Structures are given as structure tokens and as C-alpha cells.
Length: 107
Length: 119
Image 1 (cartoon, each protein chain N blue to C red):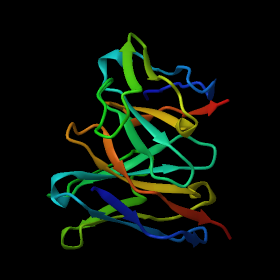
Image 2: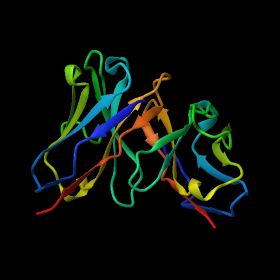
Image 3: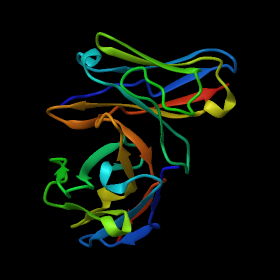
Image 4: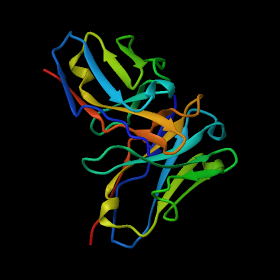
């Protein structure tokens, strides 16, 4: 089965740049999607197909992939960006697969 | 705007079944699939299956095959997920999510339904 690996937590100061990684075999050949999850709220898709941003998502959110790693980058981080972030791909052997999630803390 | 409104929290005994609903609005219901994803305490999100709202075709995760049934009512624009033979490990937050235009992304999500399995 296909496995996605994320760091459990990332900390960043307000106004700085946060980078959350998602590792998986040859992930660069798959479409990677990212979701923001805040307690008690519906998860929100912030990036789809590696780097596309849904309408309403700030330009501060961007995505990239290279080789075995996908990265969600949040520029000029705000306190309101504190959340869990999950990456997801589709794999022919495992269908919809999620990473373990990364807690973003804004110090 | 797209909204997915899920039914309320459930408490079930081991061996029982639970059926969670997901009322969709703000788009043409039959144009997109409805997925079900769960998150047990301290665990990652886990995909359970989906239904094509247009023709009712379903696909289930191997992990839940035989225990999960996903249905929909097009007249009510509502999707349903029924999980049977519940055990304590099924205690989790259950989400419905709508597929996106590209098929593989989950573009909109409900807020989740807490299901607790306890004797």
C-alpha cells in the first residue's frame, strides 16, 4: 500500500514562511492535494493537483512537488493559519491516501 | 455556496450499526461523487468509499468491504454511510466530502459526525 509521510508538527513565527512536507514514493508523478483542518470545522482544500489554489484561498498558500516530496508553503503566516494540514493523493493500489497530518503552530 | 450538512453525533453498542447522513446543497447533486472519510482519535484521515451520485455506482476501501454501505437519495440530495458490526475501534469522526472537477481531490467537506462505540 502507498504511504505518505508528514512531520507531526511545524512551528513558525507570525509573518514568516512555513513549509510542510509530504513524502511518498514518486509523489511528483501523482496529483497532491492539501487540506486545512481546524477543530470543530469542516476541512478545507487549500491546494489541489500539486499547485492549484481554489478560489477564496489566499495567494499566501502555494504548493510544489519534486521527486519524492511535496511541499505546502504558507508565506507571511498569520495566527489564523494555525491548523492541522493533511496531504492526499490517489494511488492505483490504495485509492485515496492521506498523510498523517502536520500541526502548524504559530508562535 | 456548496454545503454539506451532516447528521448529529451517535453512540452505539458494539455489534450495532450506524447510518450517517450528508445533506448537500449549492450545486447539482448528481454531478459529483460523495466520499466518506473517517478520523479515529490520534489517527490519520482514512478513506472509506464513495458513491457516484448520478448513477449510484460505489467503490469501497478494502478495509471496510463487507461492513460499509454507501447510498444516496437524489430527490433529497443526501448521501448516506452505514457501517455495521461496530467495534470500539470504529469510534471516530466521520466526514462526507464532495469530489472535485478533477475527480481525485475532495473539494468540499462536511463538519463531521462523531460516532462513539461503547458498551
